[in-house]
Image (cartoon, rainbow, N blue to C red; front, side, top):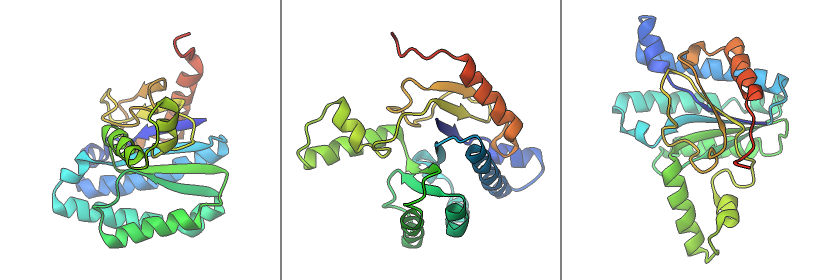
Length: 219
């Protein structure tokens, strides 16, 4: 099973608690760690999270600096990923990230590449439209014939199966440029619960919703 998650509502959760908005991001990361453990228990094989969109990079410099620091600190926990047999991958264009951040990302990817229990995709500076354009340009430069099959093999997700379920927390009911190609037949689950409060009980509700849906892919 492949689960996609749009982790929305960190800042609104923090505001509702009287906390600074960056605290929402920190609690959001803590919650992500908890739910990855839950995914391992449920034997979910792939989790893809929307951590930082291309649009998010338009936020103020101070918030972005804090986000990069939080990301670096989280990804440095390679021992924890390896202990959980979790392989970390990254979707998106990392070229505009600080060099230090890029090095940490690449180091974590390399150190966890042999882990097999869970594939954990982190979408960073990611947008579905941008992914498709980057993929097509890459294929043109490599003189690869463009068709559905070859394009899928060259997307950021490469050989991975498409998500069975895409969850969006925070109340909004849209994909916001997340996995536009891969999510074309995914079941969509929307909840008003903010991401830091999206616990195992809420996750179970989403999984139960998936079970109630019949997927026939238009047949």
